[in-house]
Image 1 (cartoon, rainbow, N blue to C red):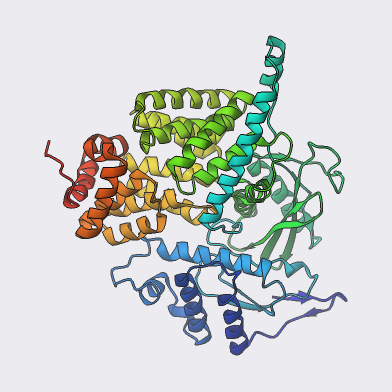
Image 2 (cartoon, rainbow, N blue to C red):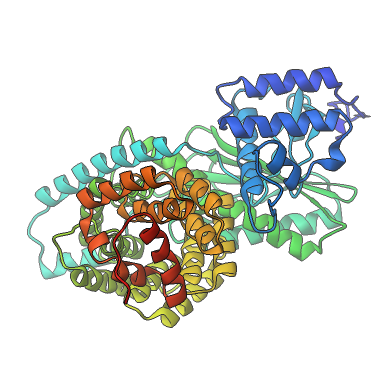
Length: 583
């Protein structure tokens, strides 16, 4: 890395010594701000020690899996994404560390995109353009990873505020006349607004100017596909908001081209006080990509990191809303609470979130996202059997109605299409469901929540390889809690016959309050012959969700569509001690 001093003299810094690198490794590993599990810490230490020992050529997914994770010689990196996913977590943890605790550390360690061999650089001088924390994620530019427990409590806190605000509004609202009802139908809830400022060209060449303009345009276009955020472009906006509806956040970008290397530096700024919410860099080679492809790829990475559910804007608002919800943001707060519920799919939280979304749709009948999320809470009643005393057909009819309303309000809202896909799937119209999912995925392939759910529907319909690949990519790219999708990967591994990997994914998902999670784990334990653990899972289901075991063939057929796949799953349950008569 070449650093430019304030006088404009270009100096080539000396490479860090082995001792300096190991000292930096210790700073990172023992810092409370390096949020990574023990296995990830061993991963990082392994690749660094191998590199400084001159053995970087042997650092491959296979060697990491066998020497760090303890996997056997049958490990197949093409079929098992465990190493790739762990590497993504390390990259996110490094990003957070350098943003928070390691801002002034002398050595920067990173694991470049598409490889596992680390690189070592001396930190750029304070105030230099390259002082943005380095990042080279395995997938798109990542936001700060949040522990699942934080999201659960964030969702609960936001939900409490939102329900309180909505209840107060409903109590204080006067009788609605025809005229006022029409006004209400035209009202829109507050949702986050983001201004994308013109990107700064740091190189000043015709080529860099063209790339810079193209990148900014691509970022705007891709963020606009996320309907849970509003993107605006105003080149001459004031430095601080002057009106209540001014964007709260600004996205700034800086582009530098050095030979055949391009770096895009991105930061999200809170406009009220100028505080930096999030920063990241994106590096690419101009030699290996066409410029238009490079712009597309970089813009997709930025949009995914910033605008998707659990992205940096949502994280920033969720954190703020745990303390207070400003003005008329209660309806939007209900959507945040929904994603908090998604963290552990708990039936207790489910009922409160559903009530919150019902209030939101009454207050803002034209809020398509709220209708879509409400539809999915009704679907959850059916697929997770949250309300065992209610008729599943009633929940599905409500889900269909809410999803249809969402799509009618905004046919381009992928969350609405996601809800419609699920209602069609559980109604048994699988081809129609997949067609809607494909349409939504074409609209916004950068929405990981949609991509993962669509991938799981493909897999459960018998298209296991492409479907599970999409789910795996979601686990890598989604910055929020991914327990639901990890449970989906457990099913993928089970169908493939890799029961050890299936158990590992299920344990990682850890959705203990969710009945279908227990069913998945029970089948896996049956195949592994772990009878004692299977007995515990069976007892839990007998006490908390007896309908699953009493109607197991129907429950399996509702989710897994091919008879041969159904039979394979039932075999595991039978081997776990569940009495299932032959047809």
